[in-house]
Amino acid sequence: MTLAWPVLKELLALRERLNELFDEALLDKTLGVGEPTSGPFCPAGDLYETDDEIVVILELPGIDGRSVDLQLNGDRLRVSGHIAGPTDGDEGTYVRMERPRGAFYRDFQLPLAELSGSPSAELERGVLTVRLPKAGGTGRRRVAVAESGQ
Image 1 (tube, helix red, strand yellow):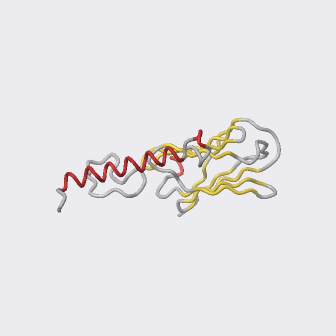
Image 2: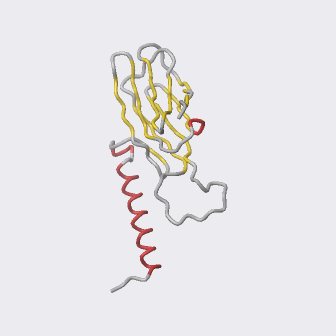
Image 3: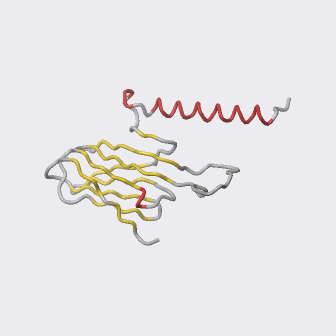
């Protein structure tokens, strides 16, 4: 039996929505699984610690450094931003959409709340590296993102 295109299109939309619901449930803070995130895109990330610093690395393909906002609040780091699509602002019609686009945020629970010095962030070839020096005072801070030449 052959499915008519409108029915197949509706089934694919339903599958997409169910996937979103499962993702939201798995990343629900009350379940204690994953990290809180928002939007259609959840950037993959790593967090590691050395003797001198805490490092967070995120994959942000196609994003401009000016579109990234980093906020440090005690032992929490929030990375947020917006990934524009190629037709944002134009009157184009997508035939297929697979790349991430839209607003997002990602929260990281840091292994400790005491940091010192100036945090730094660099975006190079779609990979954001945030370095947080250890020891010292706490408090809420905004971190600037430096974009290296590509």
